[in-house]
Amino acid sequence: MHKTIEPKIFYFGTPVVLISTLNENGTPNLAPMSSAWWLNQSCMLGMSENSQTVTNLIRERECVLNLPSAALVCSVDKLALTTGKRHILEEKRNMGYEYVEDKFNRANLTAGFAQLVKAPVVNECLVQLEAIVKNIHSFDEPSAIKAIEMKIIKTHIDESILVKGKKNYIDPEKWKPLIMNFCDFFSLGGKIHPSRLAKPFISQYDND
Ligand SMILES: Cc1cc2nc3c(=O)[nH]c(=O)nc-3n(C[C@H](O)[C@H](O)[C@H](O)COP(=O)(O)O)c2cc1C
Image (cartoon, rainbow, N blue to C red; front, top):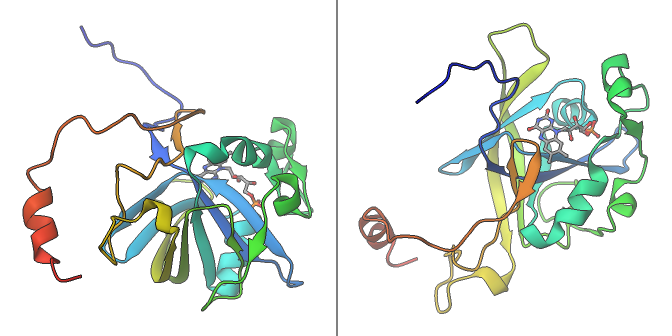
């Protein structure tokens, strides 16, 4: 029996991304987000233009998309309700948001050098994707949300989650993304069934 409801959010479970960007004064900002999807070498980010991250992306046109594993949940949660924007909108202030100058320190995370972009990588994240802004789209509703199309230009993967003996494959059995499911954090369970798509997909890139 289905019921017709009017939910406030449709966060059906997506991986968390920690976006590192550079502020105007050259210091780094770090922000958790989870409205992201991936296709080929691109990623679409859904983020409010009231965030420091979007301000930085519009100016710098680049960032690092750091993917935290489930083990980093406490660090990610320390970044909740923080912003790198000194002036906080009333709506956000009422929610309890506070300005934090050094978000790496707040989250007990450390910054390292990226290769092609000026924003830092998060050393503790097993996946670090250097990316550049390709397009910024508006949403067709009265909202501050932007859909930001990113192109991944350099990929750093911790060797602990790579398929043994293969250079370019991440092992999904070893990668445990942190998942935002509605407003709580989850991990993934184990593999439940082989996929019929996997074989033709992988043999297409067999020499990689
Ligand atoms: C787990 C998690 C997921 C979030 N996902 C999003 C998101 O997808 N889009 C968004 O605009 N804000 C999201 N937020 C809220 C941002 O983190 C918030 O806007 C924050 O102020 C951004 O930091 P900044 O202002 O320093 O850029 C999320 C927060 C948390 C804790």
